[in-house]
Length: 252
Image (cartoon, rainbow, N blue to C red; front, side):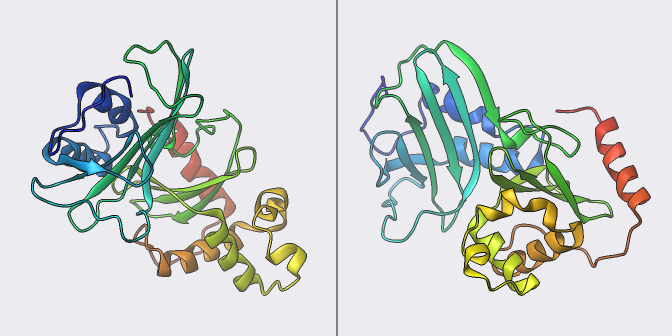
């Protein structure tokens, strides 16, 4: 970025903080925890992906780079006259947290940006359009009782996430892992269908809410994202009332 600081340990710079903090809305408890981590931890060194990839931890710690990157906790894009910037915060594991800030058009991110648009899943709530493409999305109730949870699938952007009202977090869900569980549940073995995760988005109407919920329940057993309530059969009217409740809430 325009203001390189290779001295470690150090706190996040004002520029780094301003590029990251907006994907962690402070009024949602799950994201607030990560805001606290970003202000309490120190940058202890660079990650493996070069400029803008930073590892935060306790002073004296050594960045752990031997294993795979942790799952993404929150991400977003900043569209500006100076380029398209991607921002992501990975899960906090074993006392360390990785953040990435990258300009897709250039390695450098200037100190001054002419921002045109920002988009993140972190602020999404059921009943809203996709925050990236502004198109309608498929919503599947996972937990019908308070706190509710809703699986969201955007066929336009080909993305999946799960909203958990317990802490306000929208967890990104990898399409391939989720689709594998759907294929196993539906016992679909045709390679032209089962081995192509992109079919989830082009064939989404082929699957009921119950199919899509059960696939997530199975996915969640291995890659835990939320606490799942025991399913109770709800009528279509009850599902519609659930979505009306969210649409009536003031959006953050």
